[in-house]
Length: 60
Image (cartoon, rainbow, N blue to C red; front, side):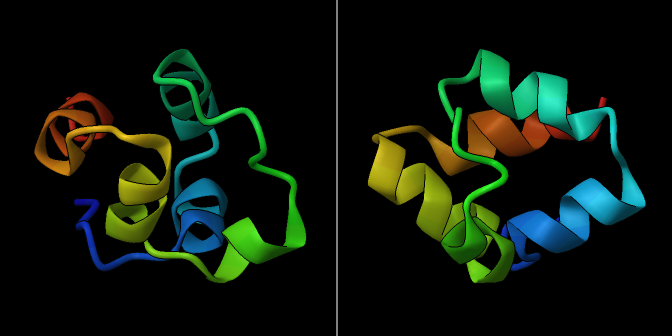
């Protein structure tokens, strides 16, 4: 189960298919070094996304 507190890098390591979901939401810089240590919640805030909606998609 993915949580908003998890780092993007951690999410991608544990669930590689999450990259497609994140990119579909507008997060195209998944390989950027700073994204590896950025929480899902922080990344959503930076991209103007609803973290709960993204989290629901990731956990489907």
